[in-house]
Image (cartoon, one colour):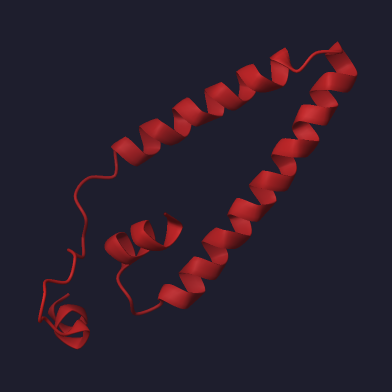
Length: 89
């Protein structure tokens, strides 16, 4: 999903660097989420607080993605060359 979204909003010119950066942040968020759930369980002896916080963060992510607008770089049509798409934008 990360690769698809990045290619549509930022094109292919710096795709490798952007994908690496986005994947790095995704992995850090994944690690932080597990640590946060453990911390919430230690404090409250329940996962409820951590799950509510995760739901809140998910709602924020949905709002951010919904507000991004149309893709800047459309999908490549059959027979169209990638270089033509990059040069056009």
